[in-house]
Length: 403
Image 1 (tube, rainbow, N blue to C red):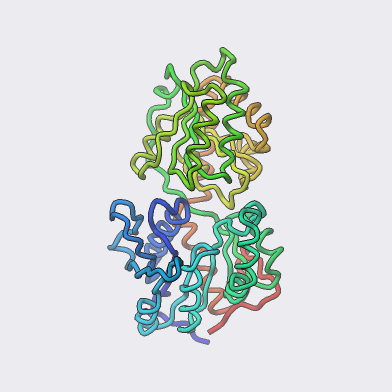
Image 2: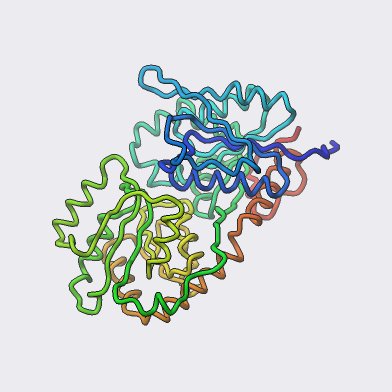
């Protein structure tokens, strides 16, 4: 079949494009912009939940056409009306729909609408098929899997994993569907603050930047910090847990901080916008992600881009940190986290800065958004037109979708 000379039309969909949706919303926005810069005719559709505009992570309107779709409620469940927008885009010509996230009514509506208009779909589960995620509210997930989720994933032209462990988790459940392993991109600052300023600080900050949720293993991190906080060598160190509360988890953390006697060493200042996030990285000396499970852990790449050494748990895919000389990759148990924190905190500041520079160089080489967009466009093109699969694709047992 002869390929059209017109630009590929890509429709990114997700149920919530606000800061409350964390990494998925940020990744979706940045990918949409990068696809547009790479020449795709890019559109973004997301549910309208009535949030203030300042809380929405909408892409640059000069690059991406965005539309918020109505969300109604019936019997307490949200119903997403993607149909008018998808019908309008379908009339404009062929398109591929890339949906972000699973286990929610928005994903059901987007995928059903795509099928109605004969659009092939790519689905990014964003870690929601990882073992920890499946074990969280397991009966709810099993019921959803039987009712709709397995069918939607199986009907997709292709799936997207951000790292090898996520690919393996998806493949165990879906043996036939193609899976692309394409990391999340990272916005890398053009320059960093003077490293000498970071090296001469009197007080030191270990930063965690994430939503406050059980999967992040923050109680375990607090127990780890309590193990080493009394050591005089760590007197200058403070722990900052920065991020929005989810399902009342902040109250549990505050109680744990009080129980461990860490009230003067740990703070939870709440959510932060993108400008504030850059300031948090600049003010930190060490970054920690102690999660039980992460499909990618975009904040690790962001911290590296800002020149920070990183402690990441083995629940994340960042096993290359020790090899790169950019950090530690340890079990999420308190004793393992405590040992890594002790090692990182007792290093000379110049050594930590050098580790941060090595991490930054790695992110620049591997996770720039332009590179990620070209990989994604290559995946879309293969799904649409066939041929030899790109080297980052596990083609499974199913042939690529061809128009």
